[in-house]
Amino acid sequence: MQKKFKMIIFSLALFSFACKSAQTKGEAHDGWVTVVGVAAIQNGNLGLAKDEALKDAKRVAVQEVLGSVVSARSDVKNYELVQQSITSKSEGMIETFQILSSAAVSNSEYQVKIKAKVSTVLINRTIDETILSQGKPRMMVVLDESYNGQKDNNQIAQTEIEAQFIQAGFPFVDRATVEKILKKNRRKIAQALRGNNDVARELGVDAGAEIILVGQSRVKSAGTVAGSSLVSMQADLNVRVIDINTGKILSADQKHGAFPHINPESGAVEAVKRAVTPLREKLTDDIVRLWDINRGNTITLLVTGLNYERLMVFRGELSEKVRGVKAVNPKGSVGKAAKLEIEFEGSSFDLADRLLTSNLETKLKIGEVKPNALDVSAK
Image (cartoon, rainbow, N blue to C red; front, side, top):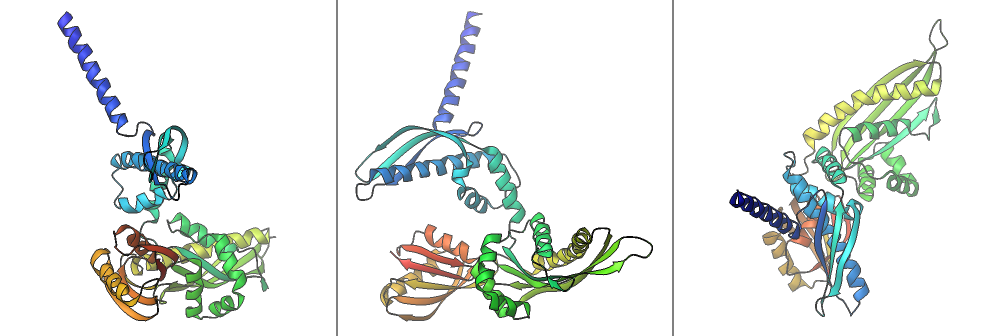
């Protein structure tokens, strides 16, 4: 009996040791992890180094918990995409944290050790959103809307189109960004609405969109329904879909919707919904079928800070070390500025990420990133 009791005590001790060992390695337990963040000390600035090391510790904490969450799921096919999405929101994923230690461990490195509680709820929610929008282009909408022949600033159709596409998993350019671009490009807006696809593409590039929907919405009253006080509201939508990268029209369609209502404004909203729903279904089918994020894109790369000899080395690195690069075509250089056209399997945002993570000898700083263009400068 005493021997059996000792075996039980020994087993419990081993289990306790294993649990402590696992937690020491930083494995997540209900979102709690203990991790270390590091940062370089620049010009003796310990305060800045501490701040950066703390940010790094938070990123590490989120990545630790993310790994545990993903291992428990079977629907994550593209871990790299999920990781990028989660890591970009690291600060918001931390529910609470405590600094256990912080100190310079050498003249060039600062370390911060923290115990943090990471929200598994937010991580799972972000994973769900990423999976839903995976492989779907970032969109924006530009519509000329009228109500009974007068310009309509309520944007009923635009709001409904965005809502339905978002529900279908399509990401959208921030509305504030779109409105800012529209305000300063009124002439271009008018040209795009009149059918100038090249100008529409320029607007999409400025906004950081990959697909732009351009068209018209016309809502009007058709009078009262016979024998009632209901007003018949009619909505006509005409929309074309333009691929920002190629400038090609992927789809175009027009739909009609009608709805009788005692309140004309409410009837207008319902009529627009009835036109948008079949329109969105048709456009979605065409976009999913014709737009592919992994197709070969031609991305304009503007490079500054390299003389011609170093530019030759950089071109070789792009072809040999950056995954997804199919070809590098020089398009001219002046002094330390050059223009390259990159045939790449992915978006310019993917290319920017790869340039920073491919261990290139040419150290780069990423500048402006647009759907079909990227600016970089050599450090």
